[in-house]
Length: 476
Image 1 (cartoon, rainbow, N blue to C red):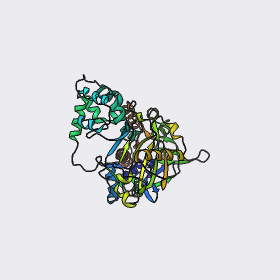
Image 2 (image 1 turned 60 degrees about the horizontal axis):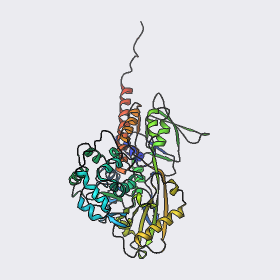
Image 3 (image 1 turned 90 degrees about the horizontal axis):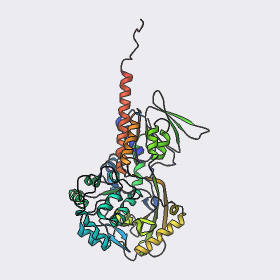
Image 4 (image 1 turned 45 degrees about the vertical axis):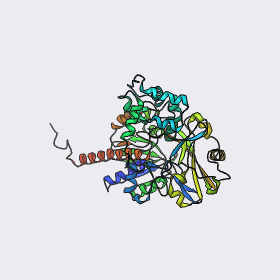
């Protein structure tokens, strides 16, 4: 059994395979020099800080449950009480209470936040008297929300949240795929404001923290999952071809002049869409064609560590998002030592912050060298938080082609991919390209993929154990 891709999806798939049968031998292959994919942590000024995803949703349990089942339950940490803000119209302004993915549900809270101009604020309640906006097929986030509440809600509230999650654009992202609850309400409710209020009111009021991380960072999760899986983990092994055989699958890995042939009863592809598409091009061309249509965005994370004394006053919130209309290179900043109390405890004299740079279409910005990106982040920090002096340490992490874009039609596209793959026994897919970019969603796809190939192996075993057909006397 082979898993291609050693990000959290591939490693979780290997772990689920191990749970499905102690006698299953699993090999995980990855072309990179390390495991973990977009989960990676390293020290900045002596404190372990995530360079990629820093948290996982708690209200979706798959990620938290995996951490606990591999023995990391005591390492789980939750954020403090500080709230996030939006840097818009020249100031940090609170994210309006009751919003759902940026869509407001409370007009009074929206007004008091000051995020919108008076004209933009006056446009929102018109949603309550406008005729219904009929949706029969998937549409972009921007098209629907703009029609209901106006452009400023899209530009100054929805866009920064989508930029933080997908590094994408509301004009292209799918309403069905990125805002499923709002999309469902849009098909039954005339007023978006009323629908969003209903969603907000139905949310659990005492459900506890929304996010969690690990004491040493989410980047510590892959190593533990890999060890718990019992799989053979091979990094620096690039899989170039995947072929169906009479008994399973043949993978071709390594350099062209000296290829390595690997035979497997079943294969799980836990690679990004473009790589998965290339591997499926010959055997499952319909899936490959659909995967090639999934666009990916790049970004960079600049981590800065300042002495506490560099701040004239400690930041009041956990961080802020920046709408694209502000025209700033930094799209989001997290005051990590404020957001995560355990980081402050690790070094009370240090303030660690992370700046995210780059959205879809901003490739030129990301072509600047590391020193320039650090300078951009420092200038942003000085302007917004009044930081003085130089950081003690800095780190630039580039994530090229890291975030899949769930553009209009994404759910139908994924359905077609899965239908094509379903015709191939012993083959399954998992990862961020399909049902969600967060850790819990990736773990969920891994569990489903593992269940699919385990069922294939079970059925194959039953067939091999059954009396062979056609072995009797067939003469005459």
